[in-house]
Image 1 (cartoon, helix red, strand yellow):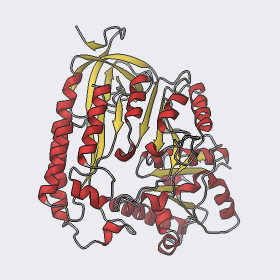
Image 2 (cartoon, one colour):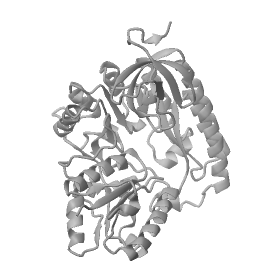
Image 3 (spheres, rainbow, N blue to C red):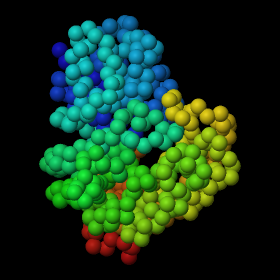
Image 4 (cartoon, rainbow, N blue to C red):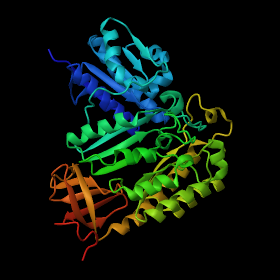
Length: 450
């Protein structure tokens, strides 16, 4: 008799990659995925604790399934990810129906934890461990683009962030293991890979040094190491930290044709006083210099970032510095959030918290500016021919394919729905965060049409 599972994923790309790996473990154990969680014999919530609303949503989901378990005692409930790591046994006290509480570092060990459940145990796996090299095959959501973890954890000490507590210390994978995974993906027909790390610029710092004291392997070295894998047309990487983002890395991105012209570099605040309070380790001026260097080597590159408003003590003048930086840089996309105090972080204990109504007002004003700036940045695509990797079909219009430019702009393509194709597309409509276009016969006219 077949057993069915359902995974719900909250949060970042790291969580999505972890969910794919855990789905691969369940597939290897003979479980089958189902779209309806109410038809599942095992439900796994892979959780995020970066924002309070994401955490509360998890508890809402759990409450519904805990009630269901009273009617169906054979239902297995698993909470994985950052909330699990943060709450540990407190989760069991709050939701005693749970079978497994497991931190992110245990994603590859799911089979062992489920074996303990079958022996009648309730399992809490949140102790710090070394992450095992992944020998399972993830059940990937895409047939075109794949996540590849290169470094786990984070050693930074940002005063607002809970990630180092819940994802542990930095652990870099060996470059050969990474390359072998990418070779396997190419053999399966994948065209694009995204290298993942909570702080990807830190890759290799824990792999030792050369005799001259330099790191044996850096992210720049890794890009050169994997770049010659045949069949991979595009390489991306996230998430970068301004403290470690080097000119040598930018030069590599300009020199290696498979590396896409898109950089995601969170700045969080445009005010130096707030950046110091956040313990980010750079200044607004340093951030602006990084973007200037990127645009020197790659003038058309897209820049995206993350920003927080309403950090403890933020004045109106300091918030205005963030608005000024957004206008100055001209971001293609910006992920914005109102500051959310997280348990166990220094900033959560400070007595200069900003009222929610002030945070929401600032967030609304920032989002308005972001949309204006993104719309301006989109104008440069009008009339150009862009290479689009078709990733799927527009759910609102089945006659249109859907994919992204090398600069990561979502693009709808009329009449082209063959997933996995790289298509030259003449852009006919531009919007703040997406484009529409028509296929053309060759890329020989890349640039302006006409």
